[in-house]
Image 1 (cartoon, helix red, strand yellow):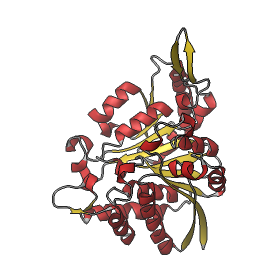
Image 2 (tube, rainbow, N blue to C red):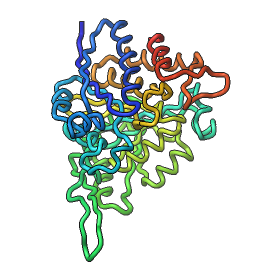
Image 3 (cartoon, rainbow, N blue to C red):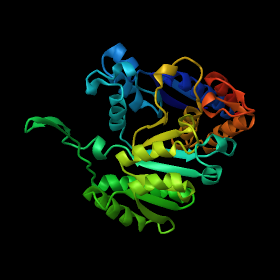
Length: 357
């Protein structure tokens, strides 16, 4: 029997609620495929601050580094908005990404046939849309040095540096081209090369790496146009690759094509260590424990875990098929509810998907 060690980080708000459903589905997979998932639960975010005084305890990092994969719920709570910036729950995300070397964030945005009407966009624009956004995760303005707030000429000045090395760009470019090769062989690189020097280097390196992938149709798009085109004509995209800040914004925009953040999974990959899998939505602390929100994003993140960390492609497909079957059966959480469907809670949606494995 194969065994895999999973570091589970439920986190804050609805994080524990949705993680519970993801584990439920993983247990159904384990039973079907005769594998064993060993779960070790650790603290992160606000719950870690309450217990240890810091958002990312050393024990959490130690467990994460020794695991085969990390499964994260969500972090954050309104009550921490006024504490010191370096102690806020969200700092844990940057910290664990850096500690694990999670440089490539994969975010699929798929409009399922059963949920076309849930999209805020017209049917003809989104029906059949299937986009993979690949965001560089450990560079750019979020990590660039120097950064800070200081006083100059009698007033405060804030600054962050968007910095990338050739090696960082080449690394994420190779991931993007490899993913494109497994899909429809179309890659759009998003930058701001008409204004930013760092984007000109980005484009230069992307073009260089492209020579190793002649089968992939490469295009370039400025980030402001890409934001518009995601709404105007989303089906033109297959794979999008971009830097950290742009990717943060564009992936959240793309997440609304299916109609709900509750449907969007993500994987953050490392060169050597474990990958991390998490839903794209936040912690929604006002809904904690209310059995109302959608666990599908977290469940689909488990599917990505099986695919990218455990090489269990068939089992990963089973989770996706189980989600589709559950939707075809008419089950809906309130974020995707429509006339004639059956309204269920977080736990009931998890139960239905696990039963359909």
